Length: 430
Image (cartoon, rainbow, N blue to C red; front, side, top):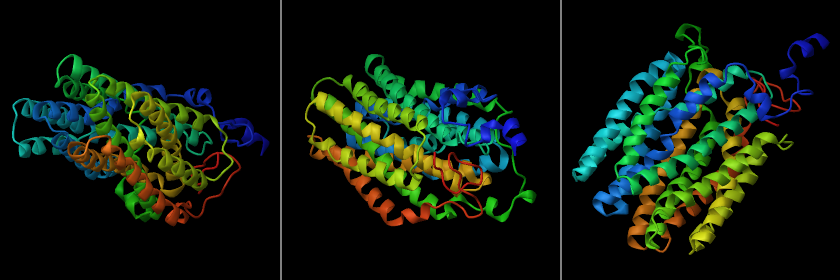
C-alpha cells in the first residue's frame, strides 16, 4: 500500500487537493488548452453577431432572434452526433471538415444578410452554420478525462473548463459588439468564421492528446450505446436547457435595453459583467474541497439561479441590471461545473464526448428558444419583457431537477471515495 501511494500520489485522496496549480502542471495539457481556447472563442461570438447583423439589416429583433435560433437549434441537433463521431473516429477526423464547412456557411450568411436576402435564404445559411459549429469544449473535456483518469482533480478540471467557457463569454460578446458597432455590422460574424477556422485547425493538429479511438470490435455493449440512454443524462439535459434560456434571454434583452437608452455599445459591457460573475464563481468552485454530494449541490445552486434570474425583469437601470446580471452569472457556474462533473460517474468513457455534447447542445437549444421568444417579447411589449424568459426557463428546469434528482446517482460497480472523482466512481464529492 505504501509503495502505491509513493509512486502515484496524484491518485491518493489523502494527499491530493483540488488546485489549479496542480491541475495545470499535468504533463502535456497546454498543448491542447491554448489552441482549444482559440477554437472555442468564436462560439461566444456567434449568436450575438447574428443578432446584431440581422437586426441591422432588417430592423427587427424578432427576425434576428429567429435566424440566431435556427443556428442554435441546428447546433443542438447535430452536436451529439458530432460527439458520437468523435468517440468512434477521432476528434481530428470530425474537426477538419467541420471547421471548413462552418467558415464557409458563416461567410454565406453574412453575404445574404448584407444583400437583404429573404428570410428563407437566411435560414438556409443559418442551419449549416449551426450544424457545423465545432464542439471544442466537449473535446477538451474528453481530453482531460484521458489525462486525469482516476484522479481527484476531475472536479477541478470541470471547474477550470467552466471558467474557460465563461472567459470566452466575457471576451466574445465584447469583441463581437465592438466589431459590429465600431467597424461594420458584418465584422463580428466575419471574425467568428476566421477564428473558428484557424483555431479549429490548430486544435485538430494536437493528435497526441486526443482520446484513443475504440474500434467497434472491442467496444462493450454499454460503451457502444448512446449516452442519451442514461436517465441522469436526460435530467442534466433539462437542467442545461434552463441555463441556455438564461444566456439567450439575456443576449436579446440586454441588446434591446441598451438600444432603448441610446447606448448600444453598453450591451457588451453588461453581458461581460454577467459572464464575469460566472467566471469568478467557477474559479471558486474548482478551489473548494466540497463535502456535499454533487446532486445536493446542483439542487441548491439551481434554486439560487432560478431566484436570481426571476429578478432580472424588474431592473430598469443599467447599474441595477449590471448588479443583478453579476448575481445571475455567479449562480450559473456551480450548476455547470456540477453537471459536467456528474457525467464522470454517469457515463462510460467510450460515450463521454457524446454526453458532453448533449449538454452543450442543450445549452444551445435553450439559448435558441430563448432568443426567439425574447425577441418576440421585446418587439411586441419592450420594457424588459424578454427577461421573463430566463425566469420561466430556470423555474421549469428546477421543478424537473427536484422531481427527478434520484436519477443522477452514478453507475453501479464503482466505489465512493472521501475526496475526488475516480474513473469508475459513481459520485463526485470533492
